[in-house]
Image (cartoon, rainbow, N blue to C red; front, side):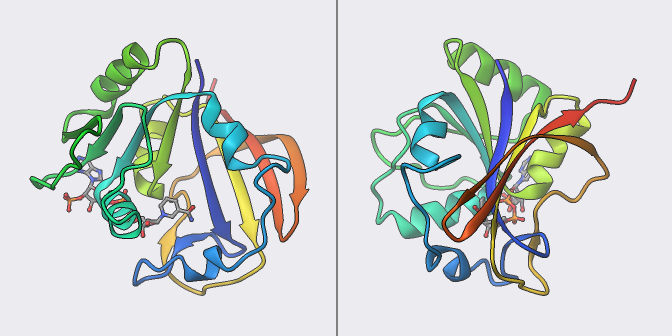
Length: 176
Ligand SMILES: NC(=O)c1ccc[n+]([C@@H]2O[C@H](COP(=O)([O-])OP(=O)(O)OC[C@H]3O[C@@H](n4cnc5c(N)ncnc54)[C@H](OP(=O)(O)O)[C@@H]3O)[C@@H](O)[C@H]2O)c1
């Protein structure tokens, strides 16, 4: 079982603008059946975790139709609305406890930390992040939500081009 942080990023390391816009990303050309694309990735995922801002972005952009059948933990200190029929679990528990619950629910499949970057960092701090997959969009933003605001060593294990994107898959190197 592997815990992944899979996300698109600007060349200068931001996953959203300061105003939480993804317009710079959604306008890019990407082949959904190409290398390191989302459909192949999500097939192997049994449980998800995301922060409240990411959850609110997804909710705003899906018109109330929740797109993830997998159990999803949303980290928040607030009592956010949860879409009917979804398996969304609001939590403020320790990432270690949530990771254990995700592993139990994932039925042998992998885990996806959707974002933001600090939440992925919280899992890394606990030694629970195994892989980082980055799709680099050909833009710079200058400012915004950072991709992974931690000091980590990573090993590049795969690289590909998917139309406009340069894609890298990295293994998190844990300290000895
Ligand atoms: N480029 C991409 O592919 C991509 C991927 C994912 C996300 N994004 C975007 O990136 C941005 C990320 O936003 P963000 O940096 O604000 O990160 P975020 O992780 O989405 O949200 C941060 C919020 O999550 C809650 N949170 C985080 N850790 C917590 C913990 N341990 N316990 C309880 N609550 C916790 C807090 O919410 P409260 O305390 O307010 O409840 C915190 O303010 C969003 O705009 C998102 O749409 C882009």
